[in-house]
Length: 458
Image 1 (cartoon, rainbow, N blue to C red):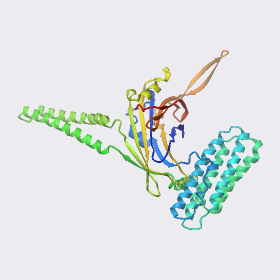
Image 2: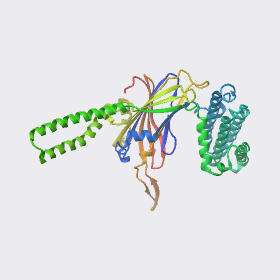
Image 3: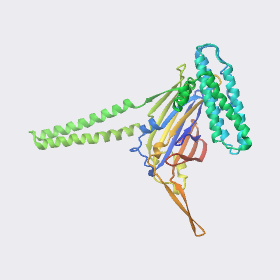
Image 4: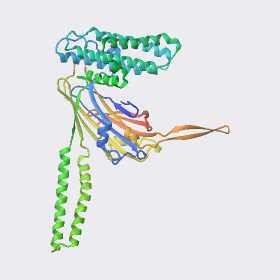
């Protein structure tokens, strides 16, 4: 369920059905040597800068042969209907092509790689042909089609160029490689014939890339749900701060009045006492407020996402987010048992961080042809790597009186326990070991996995 995304980030992609609730808990064991704590990384900073969440109609598990071409043929009816059907088709093609490109690159041998690449090329040609077969006659719909066709053609070309660049090379498959290159050239020439992009845009790599990112966002309209964020407990925090201030002020005024009654005249001693009293108030007010506030919000959600259909504006789902530093004693019993199964040398002093997400789907049904929503939660570990030590060590080896040495890099390990609750009595527990250095996640290894049909011990 947990898998690497980019160099220093990982993603979790649970599926959601209509009228369902789902909870996800992540417990991070962060070694103290990584210098991550509430003083160096606050919960609000991690949430705002290193966590992303979005919902979209499920197309992540679709491969090219399974793409629903019937959507794009529905070019009759309302303008928004055509645009939504077109976007659904293009979105599916993009995600399916990305998935199949990754699968093809897994073939390390040329005799397996090139037949798979040629097959993928033929399937892609067929999907592009189906898209262009249904060019709309209505001038109001034509801009939507051109944007989608322009982006999809460019994305297909870039995907196959990446495939050829990263795939194995062999003179035995020169013809297959040439055919794939010709396909890329044909798509490039097609965009020139359609005059989709100006010459100045084509000559600037940044401009053409940014334009295609914009077109990508346009084809996600109606497919990826709009998200609004609300910070919870903001009014409660003001009430706590105001109450603490009022109590401290009442205490200070009581002390001041007592001091004033003992001094019939204004003296230097009285002024010094009053100064000390007001100084202590400023010193302890913030500390007392922080302690009381942390005690009140412990266990309460801090943020709420609302997801709406970007076309109909219907509310589809809501998501509550918890994020807080905690202690080992406050972890659920089941999670403590899983962490306790680590080897003795791995049980080092650590900081504990708890993330939780609770998602509720309000919609009774989704768009035609879609039974689930795909939720994507991305976690960046960049702030975890910020304080890691630079440089490499050396490993010496003695072989027949000859000393050799190898360069070794510094690596660190995070332990993460994932708890996924689909229903009240069904919970999935998984533990992962994440190995990283300053620049990337080296490896994500699942150490423990167990599905328990029992009452949640939270």
